[in-house]
Length: 341
Image 1 (spheres, rainbow, N blue to C red):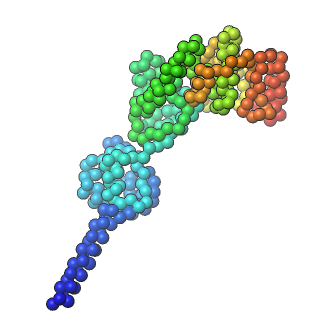
Image 2: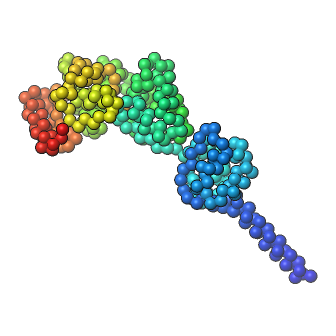
């Protein structure tokens, strides 16, 4: 009798263990076959969700059953979700239901205009570039500007994180907050002391960034030089402004490696060979260092600068027109020796 009872108890444990294992495996066991990212857009159907996640999981039926049991077929949030090995159905369902998506990394570079930047950024967002530009134009109008291009000064070169579902207004708000934080009382005081408008500061900062190649150690020297030219009433004569003028005309499809004499007369308010004064706006998105370089420009007497062929990426500075002619010839000879046209 006791033996029969023990057998029955053992059978109960075996059966319970079997169903318990199936339950655990269904809800908590690993169901991820390969790792990756799932994109679930707004207004997606539950079937679209299943189709998106099925390439990553081993058992679609068990996931669907758990999902329905937890009402994921009725409630789920759009987003970009990272699918990792070792994840069970319950955790997958909870992640999507809660909207715990993984951020995307964006690199904001020295884009020539907002439209270039938007085109690159929207490759990592749910919305397309047309929607971003439309909303940016609305934001610009609300701020009293003409178009999205006038928002360029709000952006800084750096790496940022955003969700795939970010809206244009959410995207801009992050940069607007950064912009407002950057312009603290100390920088505003230096802005007043400079005698420049903020647009002029950003325009000069963009020239400084392009001329320096983003190298911080020459920025203040270059800023001092261009302020000297500006305050003496001289044309700034910055090659990057000529390149920008040409790029604007060709929608940034032409690559200019060497500024030639024929380029200097390119009609554009940004061309500092054709026009005196500071351009009407920045020729690229800038970094914080270049703005600070203008606000803290080096007090020097330099008027001329020329690329130094002996130190690639750096320049020779001088206040002498004669010495500048020597420096310029050395650089032109170097370009010719490298067959750079």
